[in-house]
Image 1: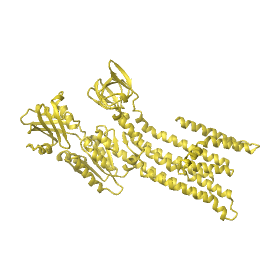
Image 2: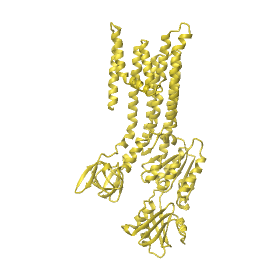
Image 3: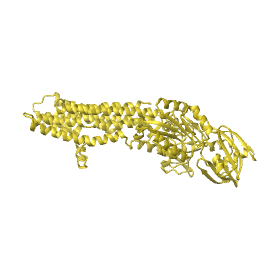
Image 4: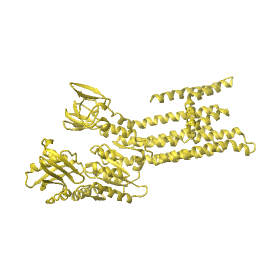
Length: 616
């Protein structure tokens, strides 16, 4: 329990004791009892009254603080001292319960906030200096001891260890790192001492971006939250006017009507009219949903995207790194005029500055240190390949379209797999066959999406038609579009958007820099965060930190559960309030019943909202 909640609890206990003393002990002078009620009211309600007064000066007249203040002061005026204190007392109990509920729902997200490192041990001159991570520059060497958090993104230059990535990915199995392994900030070093060369400033690091996502996740309001905000702005002034009319008009037009009775009804009407259950429980429900998703390693950038996930109809996926492992291996080399080793050498040198899975597989297969000074020029040609100048030779490495663009006469390969065509000094030099593997999780993911009643699952890829068709067939996808440039993907997604229903949503899942435009265009863009590029993660609305496609169906399930609870709370709160408002108007509901309709309904709605956190 935080300090604010403790202070609030103490105030409630003291106020409750004073009320019990006033109710149980018989005082000869009634004024003593009333003084006890007033003291109890001041202890538990002065902050509410103060807020109401401040909001009046700010132009925020009709809120729950105003309604509580008017209702309780009115109750004092007509001599209903116990009811006046009870209204404020139970309202504060409801607020305390809300505080507890919010703290509980935050815990599922709070584990992510723990990834923020407090310091970095950086090598400077002849000693190690402990500094704030913000003060470390790119290229500096930091040391991470066992049990410490990795403060910045970098690459291991010395040491070997197991690191805990649970805070970032939700995975409990430690990952082994050694020299030349990329490591992310926010992970915990389990055993060995690591020396890491920093590759990003703290502001651009993984941990910094995740913290920003979490802190701003609830800033984007959903349609449901916007409805409640608009509803409250219209609803509250209306019930205040009705309450005033209820207190004044009946005594004037009804014979023998008592002003006291109608004022009591009006005050009860005000108490029950507070839209607390809706204002509190709806945002709490969405926050709980975002928290539940974060527990399984899925970061949702706003509650509006959580709401949209429940309406998903079409899922479009990239292939490499999304449906497949993105771990390519060189299977075959067919060289012309060069040795196989030399062909692989030129291709590896040309691809040296690229982090594309195909580039990594070429360099891994080459297996020798690359002399960067021999590469004097590189140009990435989007969706086609790379042009580079290697040791004075012009080297082209890419697909058939690249060869055609440079008018290279080449022999088309009929092999099934990813074919890398290589040309040196304007002449075709051969092909390199690289194969990828479908992720085991992809089979599970597609089946789960089918179970979630997704209407259509599609693959969009820049890869060869034969490879793409093979993958699509194995995964039983509805449609497959291959050999696409980034602009082609955008055009296709625009056409697919027309196929969904009015309220239906289209998800695009990708991980490469070429996917960024489509991720931004789709109703919901989902990036595979573990292997994904920064551009993809930046453009996406949802980030899957574990690189498991099956987490999409889990997220959709959390979204649907959240929306069910939101709708339940809206219907329940409005139904109870309307019922008790009518009873109050006819004098059939006491202020005690009004308190239940306000605080009681709020507590029940909050309890219902907390169920979301348990969803997996």
